[in-house]
Image (cartoon, rainbow, N blue to C red):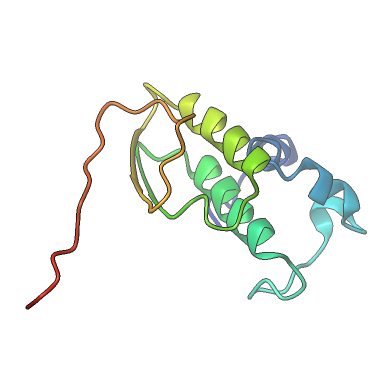
Length: 118
């Protein structure tokens, strides 16, 4: 989807960086396993990390993430933060989140507060 001509090596690398190596090992046919297009049978965290793997395959100069931590445990959040830190200098990362993980090395944080109407 993100890179139709990706090699198996590129797919495995993206899955590994998205913390899906163990998931891949559990698939009955490995990379040739057909998954439900809507993610039926996958956890919310697995679906989220598959999207992250697609993002990595795309290799875009600008990356937009909306709540990338929402379905991950603390360990996975830390590992994802480290992977995002490794993209420094390769892409501009814009992240919208309610949860600011301190492990992410950012240049600027913009806090937006909703003002209640009276």
